[in-house]
Image 1: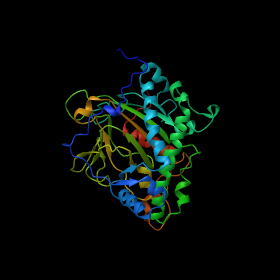
Image 2: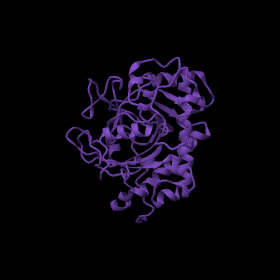
Image 3: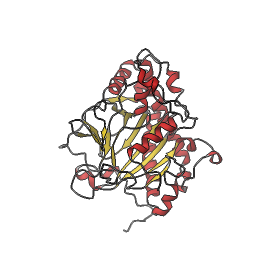
Image 4: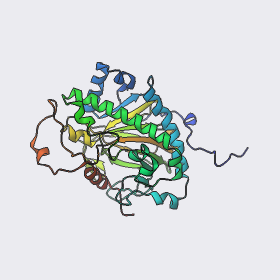
Length: 357
C-alpha cells in the first residue's frame, strides 16, 4: 500500500543496523545521571576525571524523570526537525543564520568550509534559541517556522531539562575545584539572554564509499557544556587530547587518528566546550571532534542528532573562576575582556561559518 507522504519518516531508529565492530572506537566512561542528581560522591569523582581528561563521557539517562524527558523529547524534536528540513530551500532560507549576525536559525549544507581548500560541509541544521522557547510568543526575539511554534511546549520542556542537566554537572565540577557553585550557576541562568540553543541536524546518507565526507569539520565547542543525542554513528574524536591537538587548517597538528564514538542506547554524549576551559584556566578539557557519515551499513541512513548547548550568558565576561583548584596565571588577566556573546561569535566565525549569505 502506498504510504501517505505526510506520514512518511526517514527517522527510523528501530530499523538502523548495528554499529560495526571493525572500526576503531574511543573508550568513554558511562556516568549515571540519577546518581549525580542524588549527590553520589563516587560518581561525581568519575565525572571530574572524565572532564580533566578527554572532556567526553556517556550519560545514562534512565532512572530519573529529567533523563526520561530528554530521551522522549529528543525523538519528538527529531520528527519536528524532519518536517522543517522537508520544506523548500527558499522557505528555510527565510530563517537563515547570519541575518543580523545571529547564531540562531537555519544553516544550509555547504555554508561552512571544512579544510584549507574550502571544501564545503554536507549537513544542514536549525538552531532553536533557548530564550524564545521559554517565554510567551510576544516576547520572542526571532521569527520561527510554524513547525517549531506548534512544538513550542515540547522545546520548552526539553530546554529546561537539558539545561538543568548541564548546570548540575557544572555545579559538581565547581565543587571539585573549590569554586563556589554560585560562581558557575550565576553565569548560566536559564532566564538570562544567552547563546544556548537546541540544534537539530540532518546529515545526508553517505554519497560515496570513500572516507571521509565531512558533515561537521574538526572543532571544539564554543560553549561550556554540550548534551548530544544521536542514534547512528558519525561522531569522531581525535585520539590525542585537545590540549595537544590544536586546529591547523581544519585538522589536528599532532599524530593520531580519528576514533568513532559508538552511540549507546539510553545515553546522551556529554562534552565540555572552550568556555569551560577558559573559566578554569585550562584545568578542564574541551574535546576535539568532527562528524562524518555513519560507518558501514549505517551510512545508508540520513543521520539526525539533537544537541543542547549550554553557553554563558551574553553579558558574562569571559574571565576565569576563583577557587583553590583554579591555577593562577598572568595570561588570562592580560587578555582582552570579551563578553560571552562577543567571544562565541568570534569563535564561530573562526570555524568557517559564513554570516554574509
